[in-house]
Amino acid sequence: MATKTAAASNEPIEVLFALHDKFNLTDFAGPLEVLASALHDKNDESTKAFECTIAGPEPKVMSEQGVVIGSQIAYKEAYERLSDFDVLIVVGGNSDAVLKGKTEPLSIISAFAELQKNDSSRERTLMSICTGSLFLAEQGILSGLSATTHPDYMTKFEIVCSTAAQRNLQERTDVVEDARYVVNNLRFDLGDEDENPYIRRKSDTDRRPSNARKGSISFKGSNARRESIARRAAMRLGGLRVITSGGISAGLDAALYLVSILVDDSSANEVARLMQHEWIKGIVVDGLDV
Image 1: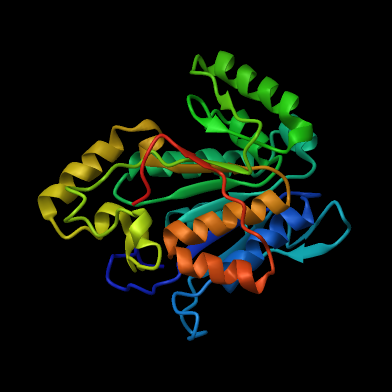
Image 2: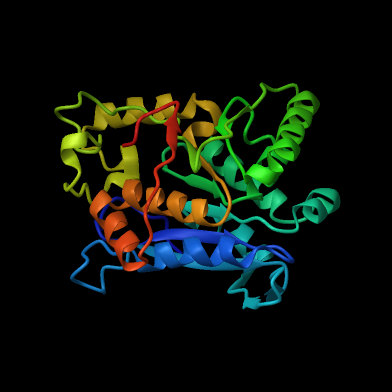
């Protein structure tokens, strides 16, 4: 697949779901439904906003609920195509076995983060649902960031975060207990607010910045673009946006947030309406949405 450019405003955003044995089915199916329902234009079903791909350790992956999901690609191919994806999503379920066995999706999480460090010109997002945040913590991704998980796993989460920080000699994670989801944007404004169409303001709720997901790649001022890419490269994780959510329904809220920033607010609200779901907002720290 060719490397994307900022040319097509309605180009689908590429999302990779990284599944593991005995994953939680709803952690996966909820966000998938949100992203699959999102359109750039609610009146045109051909304006699909996201293209989702499922990677798994086997051709068929069994959830902890006993439902089998077919993988579209193996992890080997996922690594080969990793640079094609804008978003990586990991879900919860069977977390103890994954952590103990050091199995996927641990390695692909690190590879995706490393990809952003090495290529900060691209805007990428790493999102975990429920206990999937334990996987991010284990790999040291959450060092110095704020994050959350399912309330029942908060103590376990704090232990994994603390152990990773000590092991890697990194900063500790600010564990947030009372949030539906936590967003570490690690973003910055590109030029002055008045000249930059990609900064979201309260007055812009119904405005759709069609290329907003492209970040600095879409910004027309070449000097500002070069400066912005350099600033992003100097940031933690190369400016990777990291989102962690609580369990199941909180994952829906996090996915709706993802739609709101990568497409627009009206698209997210339309998906919430279709699903008859009340979108409860989480918190955003350490940056601006662009």
